[in-house]
Image (cartoon, rainbow, N blue to C red; front, top):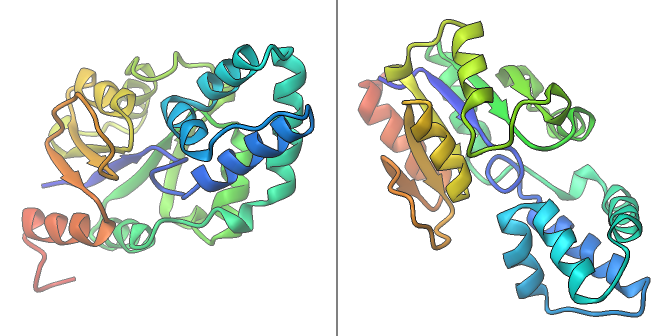
Length: 215
């Protein structure tokens, strides 16, 4: 039975990649540079930090200055244009109604995460979240997940990590919990479950938890 979901935020819970790519494009334009959106997306799906570093290096830009331009552009786009993926809220609601709990482990800042949660009415679904300021090692290190498990006395056999990148899945596997890869991008890990949409995850959870007829 899966009672506890530990979510990645950007690219998993919220569809943030279009805004990240647009912010990179605007930042490059401010220096008179351009790059194909598909390439920028592939870089930022590894991590936003990797994307910023690679773009700055490729176009011989000062990385700190480029990142400042990126951050300003990203903030201007606004959280209202970065909605939850279809079906994500239904999964969170199901877990809460089933007596379980939702958590978040993200590399994002606490302020940006809470802005997303509040803008889309998602905050009440989550018991806790670990963000950049908590200073845990970045995924795939499992330290942040381990901290949640210890703090809330979560049974590992009832936990599942949901993420859209190999580093998310590796973190979950190293913490000894179930894993779900979301999205369909190429990956090298072997999660317990793979879904391209959250309706499929909800159906799987209902079947796995024996609640198909009750929820």
